[in-house]
Image 1 (cartoon, rainbow, N blue to C red):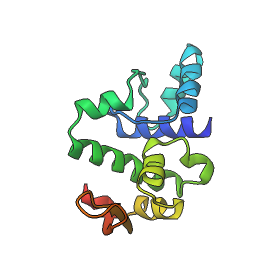
Image 2 (image 1 turned 45 degrees about the vertical axis):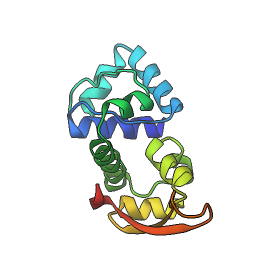
Image 3 (image 1 turned 90 degrees about the vertical axis):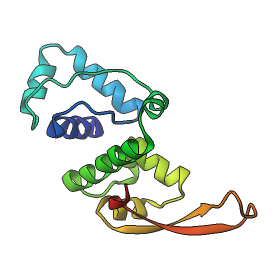
Length: 148
């Protein structure tokens, strides 16, 4: 429930339509909130934007297909840094509810400490496999939140 409330807080604070890939658990909690038709509008009214937060289903795959890589990277990094600015470091428990954090950890091999460094505006070294080099060859790149 905590990560759902954090998600709603961020959605409300930016006050625009945005796609934020969160875990199915967070989405399920949001669905449960929405069904409480008397309570949910009240919850939305005490969030920073004070407006009703509408739900629209969509998969991350659909979002990726309809969004340029540059825009998608900017939006995902924005969520990462905004979460950190408002709530501090991701924990092992909170990280599992945010698709961008899972992608960085599982897909790019970053540690949770690396993700938190990146979210705080720092830089981290990432080993990326070079497709033209031998399979075990690696190149090192540096990621920072300003790169997107």
